[in-house]
Image 1 (tube, helix red, strand yellow):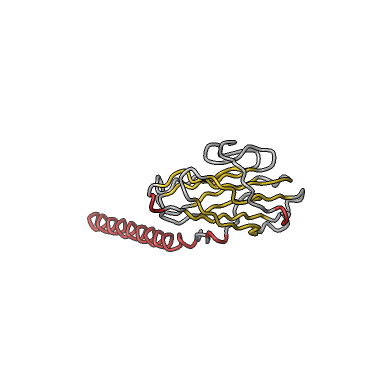
Image 2 (spheres, one colour):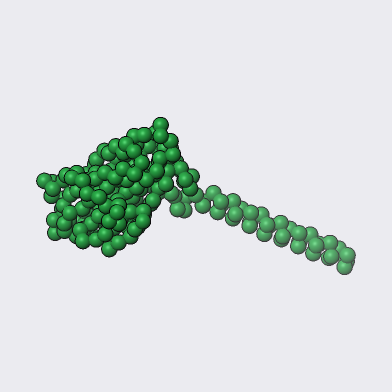
Length: 199
């Protein structure tokens, strides 16, 4: 009788372990199936960028050229690769062309904290170009404003620029914002103003 009880107890233990393992495996399968649905990735186009004023420059992807964005807000030093943060603007990306870049995308972007009244300047500087055959380098600058009323971002200015040689700096846009952060349309111009050496 003792031998029969030992065999029966051993079978009960094996059955219990098998049931527990099957339940655990079933739970793990459910978790693996549900994981991608718990936090779906957001579409980058639906994400509102931070900052009140956004200045972005894009030039042809894959081009091994270092185009630098320089911005100046009223009453502060210019912001660029050698001075990446100030009271108003921060340069969030200093793109060096293909160097240390796994994406091949060419862009730089600066964000402001607030929109003080006065004149803003946006310049581009061709710091480096690895292949002379890639000259001139064309770039697009977009300036966007986040409306305080609803948080939506609207494009207030878009400009094209052509950089013809290394070390060229060009003023893409100068514009004035009023005390409420609104663009004064008659203020838009591209009168040259050097920023890089000021920064």
